Length: 474
Image (cartoon, rainbow, N blue to C red):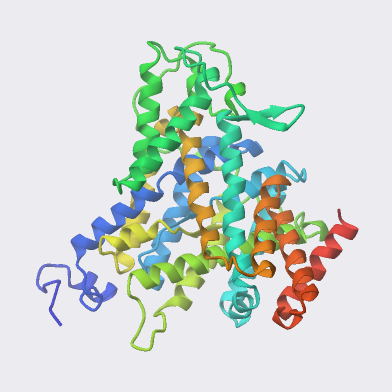
């Protein structure tokens, strides 16, 4: 085997620790792979604080928490598992946290964090026992695919609401906003069109495989919005829930650049504020199960996909280091809770770094260090208009929904429960309800079709749990 990294260059320790030659890679390739993955997933630095801040948690603290949680988790993945995978707070899980648990069920964000902590502890326990394998084997593929797609549809609806593209309607529940107004200076009216423009730019750039398509799309939309006015009113910098909630201009923003030294005191209001005792109630069992399920299946699918692309299998086709990577991911969920984050999970964008040659944990450490550097860009995060970032949210949603293409569309007992799961997540505005309807539909259809032998013990147990939940907890 050709020696890729030469000895005597002061880099022998890195070579031996990450086994670069064994993986047929080198330091330069690993660094470039890390940069590539970071750029493709860096949108989470902006999206997660925007979504989570709607619970009442401070935006600046959430921004630092997102960067720190992602950095620590990713560096741990690199050092412990030696895998080229980036981790960060999970998209979809943060929306479930904000809009279902806090907004819909009325729990405080502290109690919601307690539920995240408990689901993380269970995930760690499952990762060091055979329970993880049992869970992955017992849940049918169709429902696993539907969970990803359903979270995507849920996110897409949120993105359409936040930009103001979709608005409430007294007759039809929702309707399309007026997209014809495109003047100058009135960002409340222009947000729907600019948000849709952001989505289109990101989609076109991604199709053409432009490096950093998401960030470029957000930046381009922001610059277009800048160009539409000579002055920048305060409202432009406000992260708004929707186009209609931009605050009236009360002055001008004092802005001294895009960089600032992190003020870690901003973390104090959310650092280790999880209310674990408050989360120990029967009504929160479906919430904990939902955090656990989405995290497990998202993680498993991402890690297996990355392993295949990075050729991390041995001669027998077994994935090398999968156990360590799953343990690193599960522990990251618990660590993220300390910083006030939803479950921290592996990102499918890691495949971008693998595509340019990333093969080892050196790629992951590079990603983690770049997230640490990202903490200095809080002023940039605060100045991005909500509609520019929400366009990225819609784009991410579309990617997640593509998992439905792997369904068996010839078997009604497989695709109908998957569609029920996906649709009910968005239409009931609850990821937990979508999962519950999916399991119940799957079990009833299989029994009705005379295929009860295809129902695993895990599905029977979970179906009973969800039926009991609707009967006794509503």
